[in-house]
Image (cartoon, rainbow, N blue to C red; front, side, top):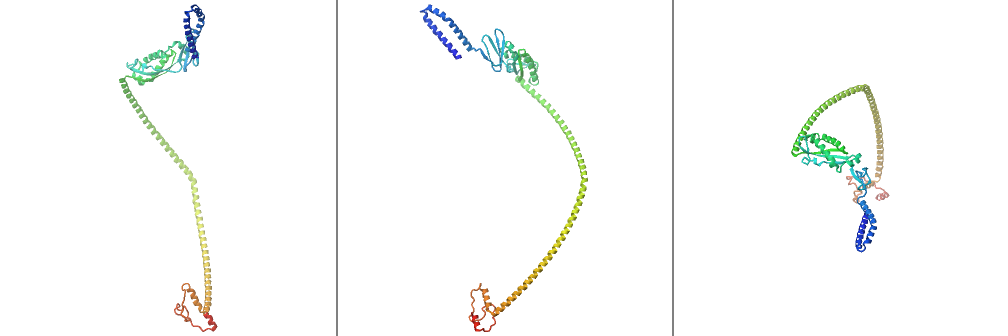
Amino acid sequence: MLQRLKTLAASLRHAFSRGASRGLEAASTAAPGAGRSLRRALPPLLALTAVTAAGYAVVMHPPVQAVPHGQAAVRTNQFSGGTSEFRDGSFIRIPGLHEVRLFPLRDQSFRPEALAKATGPAPLQSVEGLSLGLDMTVRWTVDPTRLAELSRKLPDDIEGDVINPAVQAVVYKQIAKHTVREIFSSQRAEIAASLEAELRARLAQDGIQLKGVQIGSVDLPPDYRQGMDRLLADSLASERMRYTLEISEKRVKETEFQAAADKVRRETAAEAAGREQIIAAQAQEEAMKHVLPFKQKQIEQRALEAQAENAARVKQAEGAAEARRIEVAAEAAARQKLADAEAYRVAQVGKANAGQMATEGELLTKHPLLVQKAMADKLSDKVQVIIAPPGSGGFIGSALLAGVSPAPKAAPADGNADAQKE
């Protein structure tokens, strides 16, 4: 829309310039007709000029204004003096009719730089007359219930015209009542509390709510700062020594309490041990009343067991002896039978050998060459050939038999002789 209005204004300016040039050219030729034409065209031109001016004003100064986040807007009517508050959204602001002021709803921080350094433009003075600086932070906000009143009462620069003079008036007066040591170390919290209380009451009259006052570092001249540091070091050393002595005393008391507690603990433990021994002795005495009969019964039972074991061993020995006698008798009977069987076997073998020898003797008597055959059979695996002297007519093994020759026999009959030769 802004671009369209700009285009419209440019077109109007161009039309006006072109009409003016044409009017100047025609003025010399038709002055009376130009006057009448100008009178007829003047009302529309004036209306168009007014509309253009209004559009330009609306574009350059829009009547709708938005409320920033964290702020509140107070609109004041310049003619009636009425006010309206807006916390969020947008509202209509007509230039020349409405005046708008914005107030912060969130906490604001103010740090007076002029009071921060001992060598600054407006240093503080202690009760000794020493210049010092104080780093302060003042947190404040506007009372949200009095915005309509504060829009007419408060100046535009709240921190410079309201808060800074109040801080200086309160801080100079409070710091001048204390020494440097109190400000630097010992009473810093008390000074901050008194500053906050007095400053809160002073700012509340102007509609400012004080949220808190924080005191940071204290700036001192270098020489005095060194002396203060040494003094603080000595003070800390003395404090440390005092705390050390207190700790030592507490440790001594603690040792005494521990010794007393150990004594009580040992006495209690001894009493408990004595009671335990008494109870154990009583329990043992009660137990012995039952244990002694039980032991007596165990002794009797062991004696009976020993007698039973002795009788069992005697019975076992008698049984073993009887079994041994039976075994010996059985073994003797078995050996006797074996001996009888062996004697019978020897007798039978002797009888068989005697009968066999008698049979063999008779056979050798009838056939003496069987001796040579038997000898040849015995020597067949060792001697392959036996040579006998021809015509000896004797026993071929006579040399082996130490020259023993058999007795000559009677000449057999012819038939038997041929058979013997064969």
